[in-house]
Image (spheres, rainbow, N blue to C red):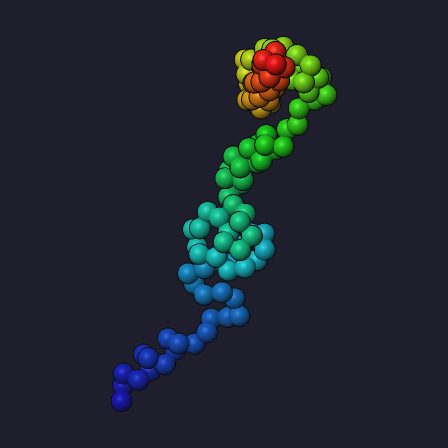
Length: 119
Ligand SMILES: [Zn+2]
């Protein structure tokens, strides 16, 4: 009967918190795996360095073209395209979008001109 005491305390709950393998999320407090970089509940990174690499990309996507850019694209797509190249040289996130829109505008202009001249 001596060994029974060793088994006794092993199943006792240590507290109301999550189990040993998980920690509460920094942001939504839901239990996530210890060592997980990203919360599966709210999709937030747990480490500041991961969050910082994520943030700039998020607002780069939302960077809108200015009115001047649009005038260039619609009225004179060649100038819009050159402006896109200037942005690319400056590392401006608008560069790709401006060149894309200018290229589309040029193609449309060519189609409209071609259709008008053919008849
Ligand atoms: Zn979370």
